[in-house]
Length: 88
Image (cartoon, rainbow, N blue to C red; front, side, top):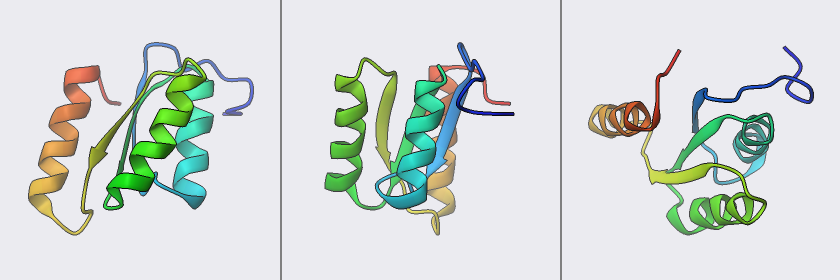
């Protein structure tokens, strides 16, 4: 799948580590392809800033604090993503 041309409209993407680097680029590419993106990271300020930048582009992105080492945080992240829509 080429994310530059793919349509992910009505799809939900949960992207861990989305505050910077590859995670931020993945979140942006998925959102630009039409996905509803739940971006997660342990870096709250940086993650929220990244999400806000994408939101100002008119993209459907939300940010959620998430420590990938925490099973409880994974449960919360997946539950939040499922509220947004169906995960595949």
